[in-house]
Amino acid sequence: MGLFDTSPLAGLLTGYLPTGIENMQQGNQAIRQGAQATLKKMRGQELAPEEQAAIDDSPIGGMGVNNIGAAGAFMGTFAGRLAATANKAKMNQALRLENRGLPMEDIRQKTGWGRGPDNEWKFEVSDHNAELRLDKAGTEILHHPELRRAYPDLINTLKIERFDGPADMMGRYDPDTNTIHLNRGITDPHQAVSIALHEMQHPIQIKEGFSTGASMGMAPIQRITTAEGSAMRARLYRMTDGFHDDFQNWMAPRLNRPKYKTWNLGRFQEEFDRLHPEIVAERDQAWNTLNWMDTPRGTQQRLHSTYERAMGEYEARETQRRMDMTPDQRLARAPYNHDQAIPQDRLIDMRRFPGENGVPPTVPELTRRRFPGLLTPEQGGMALSLLGIPLLPNRAE
Image (cartoon, rainbow, N blue to C red):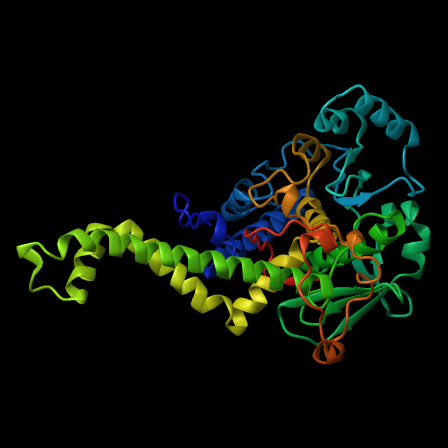
């Protein structure tokens, strides 16, 4: 997503442009290929050259699998102090180190505990045994011994159900029935486990009091998207007005010169555009964005970008990113330490909206719902900014 890196539009447009989605799709494909090859190597199977290259080039870190060893447990799911397997002594040590002023990453390295974006203490649970399988009754279940030990109440009552839906709706979680819904079209086992682990992070968030996930149909997500869209639109119009002023200021002193007496407005515009290609590029991009942002696709993409900034969704995606890391890899790379990390002030804490962040609405409910007016920063404590960062094009709510 390197378009317009030096342009005034960079902070405004990054993440909204269709090119960004293409880059993300390529990155996600590379993650899947690297993860599949890593699993194959851990099983002792011989790798083809292109599979080893997929491991080395994987956006998970290019860290290979050289340090797997006998204790090659994968890490991924974020758990908290209510987990039955939580090491309270290490958590207390983390608190003491924090009080002494140690950097949070140093604390995580020493204790395994660290504060997440929602400021809650967390540790990582191994995902190396996680898989979807059929029980004796032929019912699909999430087999995850480590999570079962950590949260037996959640795992023992968890249900997995498949649904028919569009390809970009991969999964969702229903807290009323403790059910993970997976798209029936997901046939790749690794992808299915990845989506299930994303969804499993949500009941843990609810139990632990972490900031939760979201849905694009939730009123706060709708309001923030609308408010940010209005701010973005206003800023783009100010920019286009500025481009017009630049042209007028350039043209004004030339109008009475003999050289330009026969020039019409179009000729002046052509000459200005020829002399200032960088302004032309920014002007055209601003207008293209204005024309795109309120189209059905633009509106949906902006809404999706807001939804992905919910702290719980961000955390659930990080679970997916780290599910194939070994302990050495996990220790070497702090959570959220990658090129698609979202700045803290861009994240949305859904705990700010009590009563509005419950069960994601169904599609019929979305068609009937009338959303309230814009949420101001004073009403919601939410800093409205202009940068959108979509991360995964396939939704897993």
